[in-house]
Image (cartoon, rainbow, N blue to C red; front, side, top):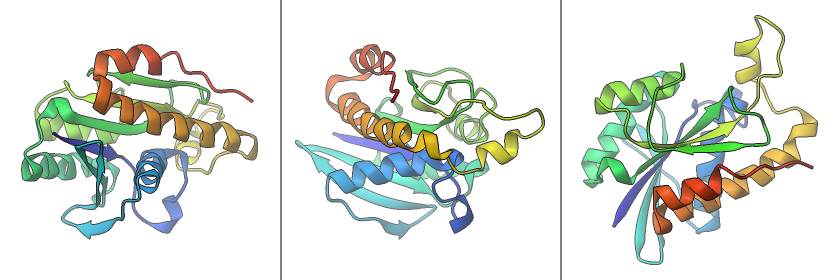
Length: 191
């Protein structure tokens, strides 16, 4: 039983630990928890971890956000993983910093990474874990906000949410999407 866990973000030091790269930070935490190691491979940094007999192929696409679908499709095909065993983790402006949302499919919501995956897979039916980044920015400053670092007062909530997301990924693998959604979508983390 293999799963593809794809954290979205942009490569490059200037993007490290920004709101837009939270997908990378979540899969990093998952791989670290399970003593995995990253290697550079085709279209992505890749780490394979085993949890109770299940194999999780974790990727951080090196294609930049707008071409994430190339990496996701390549690794699904290469590892012969069915789309219902794919989980994509990314940032979401429309969700407050205190929350996450797990969904079985749906629109890309204007997220370029999801748009690319949708085009590559020719489907909107794959699980996605949306990590709320909130929308606390002045008019016209969305790009700076999304590509910016977390506010100091948000860091503790973000770290707790990363830990919660790792547990959600594990639940997705062992309990399935429906049961995990019921639990994950009730999570609210505040200080």
